[in-house]
Image (tube, rainbow, N blue to C red; front, side, top):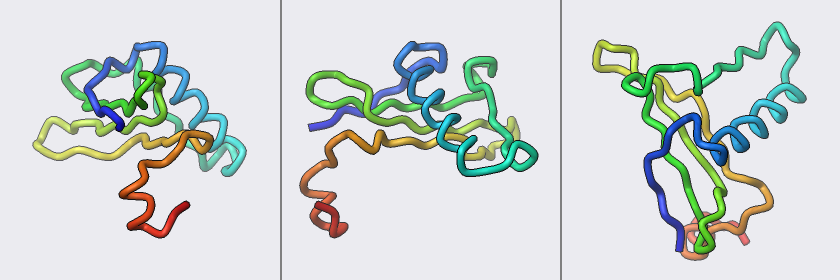
Length: 97
């Protein structure tokens, strides 16, 4: 069972997940094409950030939407740790082990 809750972008678990995502993206894309956003420096009111935790409360994933102030938002971050186990029912339905 996993839990999904709102979290501050300055929480250590979020900072670690985003750092891992930034490292991954830096390996994939050249610097001129890589526009990393520092979520921790955004005002809380302009950010929706959720964290996924496993049964032991380990942070296994996160997702963020930056609100534009006009009722729209943009997905800015999404990460599920590759070494974290997948949820069984959804994973099986999607054809994953």
